Image 1 (cartoon, rainbow, N blue to C red):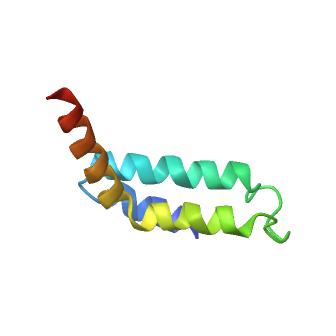
Image 2 (image 1 turned 180 degrees about the horizontal axis):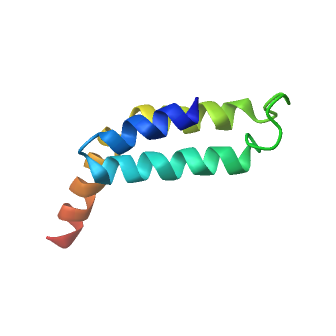
Length: 74
């Protein structure tokens, strides 16, 4: 599933948001051992779900962070 998502992100033109989404995906895979323990139940499912939500809203989060950075420069 994550491989397909990453492939879609690579085809998209918004590289900044895609880079952040890819980082989140890699982090989820690592933290929850998704590549090595594929049949195991995800122990901290709430954390996993929150990571998925971050991917879903990565463009909004990135936009808010840019606004915060801009306001901090003033």
